[in-house]
Length: 82
Image (cartoon, rainbow, N blue to C red; front, side, top):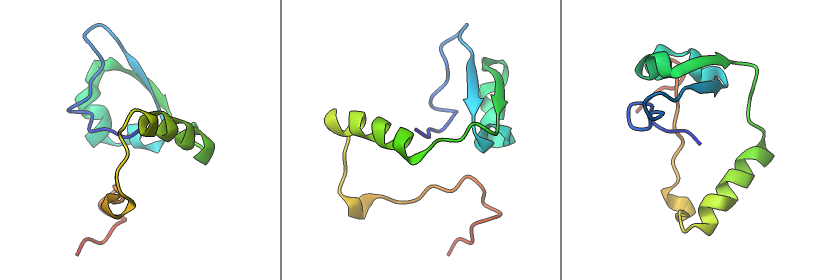
């Protein structure tokens, strides 16, 4: 699951370990500060992992119509916005 790190922070005293490329970006790692214990860019999600998380959220009523789904890009320099 991808969340805005400024809105979803570990509770005080708790630290997270980041998995994936995103935690190397200052915009993501910065707001976490000392709450980010470290990260490993080689740990990447697989489609099956994402599907299992999505199934849990869908069962909890967090689904949405496919037409409302929009991609979220972490790297603005890779994406050309209109």
